[in-house]
Length: 273
Image (cartoon, rainbow, N blue to C red; front, side, top):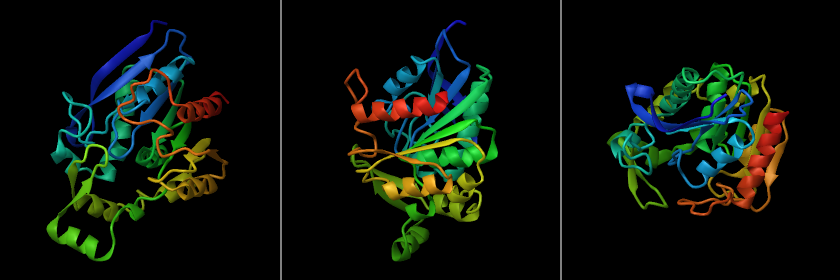
C-alpha cells in the first residue's frame, strides 16, 4: 500500500474542542495500529515521542499520537501550555472521552485489523479506562498511574480548593503556575466507579503489558506493581530508569535514549506475540 504521513492533523474531541494529531503508516504496513496517549502536562511532540513513532513505524506498524483536548495546547501551538484556560477546565472524563473521539477519527482515515494502545503516566490510566469501554486488542502501560483519587489533596488543602474553586500547580520544566479548577475533583467524585482504574483493569480480558522504571520519582513503581498484580501479568522493570526512561524535553538527539529504547523493544515484542 501507499504510505501515509499526517503531521498536525486536526480531530474534534471533548466539548467539541479541536486538537492536533500525527499519523504515520508505512508502505509495508502489517495492518496493526498503535495509538499513543501522553500523560499529564504532556503533549504528542514531547521529548523523544517522535522517535518512538519512527521506531514502531520502522517495524511495520501504523502509529498515531495526539494531544488531549484540554492539555493546554491549541491547534496553532501544540507544544507546552498556551491555553491555560483549557488546562484549568480539564477533567479525567474529558481525557478518557478524547481517546474514544480520536480512535473514531482515525478509523475514518485507516482501517486496522488490530488496534493496540500505549499510555504513558496518566495516559496509562486513560488507556485502561478506555479499553474497558471499547474494543481494544492489547494495551501497554508505560510508567502508568494506578489510581486517580490519590492524585488529589486532602484535608484543609482540599477544603480550600473547594471554597476558592481553583488551585495552582507548578510545571517544574516551564516554571508556569497552572490553574486547575475544582471541577476536576467534582467530576472524579461523581464518576468514581467509572473512573476506577483498579476495577477497569481487573475486568479487561485482553493482554496487558506493564513497564516501569525503578527510579521513577513522579509515579512510584508500587503503582506499576499494583497494575501488574491486578492484571495478573509480570511487571517489566527498567533498571535505574526515571519516569520518562531517560528522555527529556526538548530531545535534540537523533536516537532514542537507551532506557526508552529498551521499553520500545519490550513493547514491540509484546505486540508481535
